[in-house]
Amino acid sequence: MIHLTRCAAVELGKDRIRVNCICPGGINTPLLHKHIPGGEEVTRQFLGTIRPIPKAGTGDDIAGMALYLASNDAEWVSGTAMVVDGGFVARGSQLGQQSLFDVPPKWSGPSFEKD
Image (cartoon, rainbow, N blue to C red; front, side, top):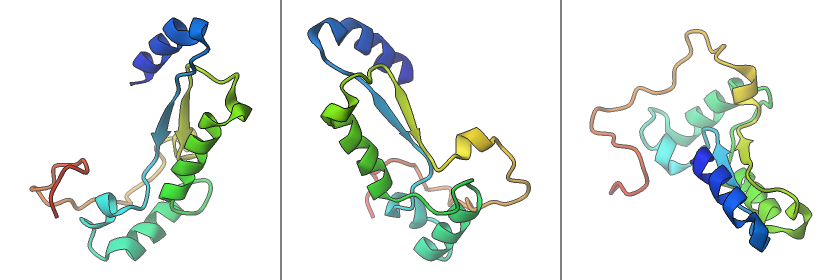
């Protein structure tokens, strides 16, 4: 997705079309917490402990980046992968033994799943 974003930004820049992608970190949404024992609250607490910014990400955090990229304030931003994860990627993999994901084998991922 990042390579496609960059290629499209180069190709479409001459037409003043900006192309960016948002790379969200673990966001506390039903897609994530419906498979976690303890649900939303347990997921919120865990996500808040594994990031340099000590809070769980929400859909509003991702929406804020989307609004910025769609605004005139971002008219000079193109070809960028915007990581919105509370500093998780910057921190690296220093989680130790913590694990949240005791995912049932039937779990298949994306939001096209039926509840």
